[in-house]
Image 1 (cartoon, rainbow, N blue to C red):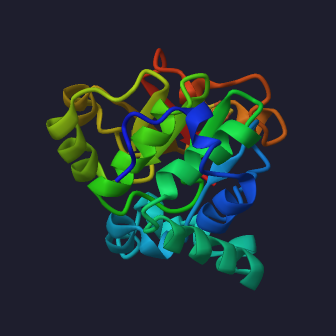
Image 2: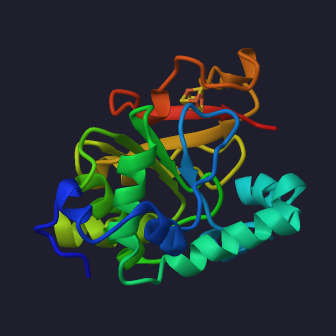
Length: 223
Ligand code: SF4
């Protein structure tokens, strides 16, 4: 359990970049995004594992189980990051590394993979609290993990935007659950998608809607 009195400067006394990378692994760098990300293998997605067998679900077309994600080098990096999350110093190492490396002011969790449990969400919240100058985006289909965390702790930090992702392609986003939990949503759509990336070379460009709490739902184009 991370010391709640810790600050980023005080972390520098007990953490360095080499040690932090040995615990966390290297960050991912999604080509679309303006920032680094943190990803683990999609094979560990709890809800995703069930959804993959459901025709028409977002996970039945999971991009994170094919293409470059199937290369041995990428697979090994994803496994290493997953194992690192069990390290008792993961939150400290992650907070240090984000503070040291992320210059864009933004960071994305889980460009592949999802929350494993309430403890992993708690560690992520601590990483966000230790980096108040950075905006974090956490997309997840683990609604019950988010609900358990909110029930025990209340609101998420202002610099963390949690988006409950829809389960089905062209399905309605889970707005009522999100409203009850004080979080946001995202969905995957054939038409009327709001994410501008497909119209701007597959890049975010100046858009930061995913991190923006004023944007209730982000609709991504179905691939
Ligand atoms: S909505 Fe904006 S920030 Fe989110 S993925 Fe699309 S382009 Fe990037």
